[in-house]
Image 1 (cartoon, rainbow, N blue to C red):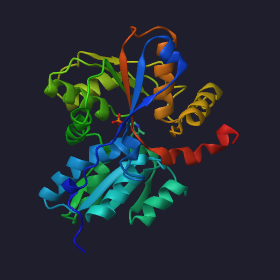
Image 2 (image 1 turned 90 degrees about the horizontal axis):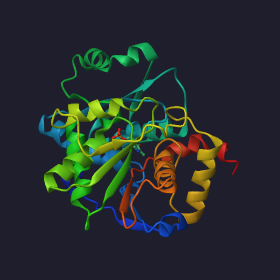
Image 3 (image 1 turned 135 degrees about the vertical axis):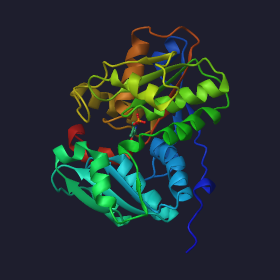
Image 4 (image 1 turned 45 degrees about the vertical axis):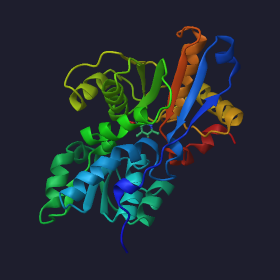
Length: 303
Ligand SMILES: *Cc1c(COP(=O)(O)O)cnc(C)c1O
């Protein structure tokens, strides 16, 4: 079978307006870029990040993607599915003891070979890769979460796809690649949009440095990190966050989840409530997808 060319998969996600009293009352408009609609499994920003990674791998003649993630990693699933679609073999190193869950089962269905590694060994990913790739000339290192400069190029295309300008653009941050890409897109387009990141891990200030490493080498101006919306840390949630998510989903028909996009939207609503924005401000949030993760959390919602 002739596998699809990576660059031929080109889906411009739509922007939708959201109608909430809170924003209307303050004269604000709220919009959402539906990157969750790019693909059910090669979801959102994970596709944006993989797009140029896959092209680099193929150009180098490396047809075996070796990557890393936790058991619920959206990146592992996206890599497994993209590998199947575009003709790459895939191996995923999974952090921690051997477990099974729907996310990993889907990875296996898409042909990914899984290797569970203890948390200490997992920390040194280049060493894991070197050891594993001995004797496999096809092996290509793809960092956890798609953290990479190629990833910033893919994510900068979010900006290229926008038909109008916004005063503020928000995204959730894990590695910071998506936010670095938005920054790159704005710089290249000469836009002065105020960019905002909501780190989903505690101590999210590290994102600033991660962005500098990925793009220009300098600490970015024009970016604000709102580090107080992590809800206790990565994949942690609270009843208040769950209530907000339930309300948002029921109000809009747009699914969000507690690991990334729930924290993002909670943060934007909380900032609006506290008059962070000026009347007439146009706000865009990027729905970065990653909806499989909610399958592990459904019990928290009492539904
Ligand atoms: C992986 C992921 C992120 C984090 O993106 P970074 O580029 O690593 O900051 C945000 N949202 C969703 C839904 C994700 O799956």
